[in-house]
Amino acid sequence: MSAYAGAGAGGGHGRAVVIGAGLAGLTAARALAGFMDHVTVIERDWVPSGPGRRPGVPQARHTHVLVPAAHQGLERLFPGIGQDLAAAGAVRVTVPKDMLVLGPGGWLPRFDAGLPLLCAGRDLIDAVVRARLRADPKVDFLPGHEAVALRGGRHDTVTGVWIRGRDRTAPDSRGGPGVRRLLPAEFVVDASGRGSQASRWLAELGYGQPPLSVAAAPAAFATAVFAPPVGHVADWKSLLLMAAPGHPRQGVLHPVEGGRWSVTLTAAGTARPPAGHAGLLHAARALRHPLLHDVLEAATPLGPVYGCTRAGVRWHRYEKLRRWPDQFLVVGDALADLDAAGGQGMALAVRCALALEQLLAGHGTAVGISHRLRHALAREVAPAWRTARRTPGTAHPPHAPNTPGTAGTWDTAGTAAADRQAAAASQDGPPRPPLTARYTAWYAARVAAAATTDPYAATLLLRTLHAPGTPPAPAAALRPRALRAALRTPRGPAPYAPPSTTHGPDAPRRRTAPAPARPVPAGAPRPAAPAPAAAPAGERRRP
Ligand SMILES: Cc1cc2nc3c(=O)[nH]c(=O)nc-3n(C[C@H](O)[C@H](O)[C@H](O)COP(=O)(O)OP(=O)(O)OC[C@H]3O[C@@H](n4cnc5c(N)ncnc54)[C@H](O)[C@@H]3O)c2cc1C
Image 1 (cartoon, rainbow, N blue to C red):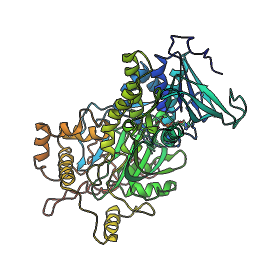
Image 2 (image 1 turned 45 degrees about the vertical axis):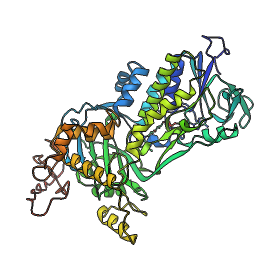
Image 3 (image 1 turned 90 degrees about the vertical axis):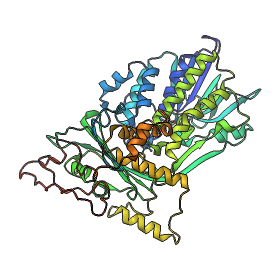
Image 4 (image 1 turned 60 degrees about the vertical axis):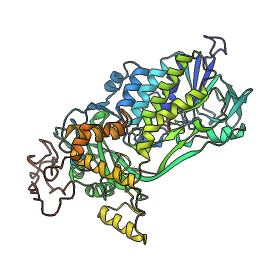
């Protein structure tokens, strides 16, 4: 039951209602709590007190990392939350010092690029943020209730949310399930995720439909959690085997709470994700390097393999609507579903909350700021959107290698062959991209090649993945230092084995001869394959 005593009971700003208790809803609630008298977060699901799994956030089963913008922003909203996350088991990974990264041009050197990641299960991240919010007396949760419509007020305003109880056991389910009731509010935030009904609700109030920017980038994800092999020793914490032109598959391994590994394989295209651990291992073997497969082969699966597919990325261009109700805002995935863009979803949620906090503080009232807010949020979305929507072949962000893939099952036998097949299936072959796209692809390939030896180029590459827009990527990529690195001819083929003392060329027990990290030009000397090492009999194999 809400502890709110009505508008005017606090500082006079009234009540805010946030729809959805995902990360965007939790962080928006935090921003509003600093300003409004009371904040009610309504959530369709139950709201667990710990890291419980919820049907409303099915993507929580997949590997989630907090990129720098996400965890630094969380720290501003909830000072000390980094320590809370670490105490709960989140692991800090310094990229690429603690991470073996096979970039499109080969293995990246190990150094601190100033891009720390926080790795933890998504349920744990939400639980730690929720715990901080629950401690705020201005905030209450209304679980088991869903928003079904907005109430419009006079002079283009939103003055409340129509809600409906989902089950009889839900607290405060007055009127029983299915009965609509009104939750009056002075400010409403829709943070209901990618299934948001905001544009329908607005249409019901007589507003126009916003343009929808869509970039088709179909991708399939398969995720499983593993316990590392007994006695596992490694000089790395994470692995990232990126996609490359002609090879649209990627694999990532991150440490999560409880000493476990969360592993996600991604394939661009409409392929179905592999089912079962045998399928996952098979798919891992088809990546550009066998390291992830070898590591997983010796690890213990701790649960099923979860799969999901995405058709592309979407951005509801609410900032383009000329008529818009005041005291209403859409944030997070409900605004822009960039999940395929590689770790940007939670960062966007946090950025939306920070923009909201800043405008509320600067303006001194929640009334009359919706226009500025919509435009501020559009500016937050734009850099990540540019990364997400790049045309096929020009970029390879970590969770969406944007190279065309194939329909049907996940091709594990030979991805390059599958891509050739797909191209041959169309009589004219793939359409020729415009000159600028071809130039960008060429330049990206040069930066990727330089990244194998040049830390500056490696940082540029990693920034596109983990921090798009900071500083603006095109400007950074055209600085003289970047141009020099990109135009310098790489000396010889890319490093063949990972730069690791435990899993590199000198590692005592490498089992499989790795495939070349990038095509070796004709006539160039081929590096020798490391000799396979047999696992000692009677001992559990260590990759
Ligand atoms: C495979 C995969 C991997 C990803 N990896 C990363 C990653 O590494 N890093 C990263 O930052 N992001 C990642 N993402 C994206 C990230 O999961 C999302 O961007 C993030 O969850 C968005 O948060 P949100 O709060 O906007 O939406 P959600 O987390 O989806 O929350 C929406 C909430 O609203 C509730 N709700 C919905 N409708 C209603 C209603 N009508 N009334 C009341 N409540 C409602 C839902 O139950 C849910 O709790 C990944 C996504 C996928 C698919």
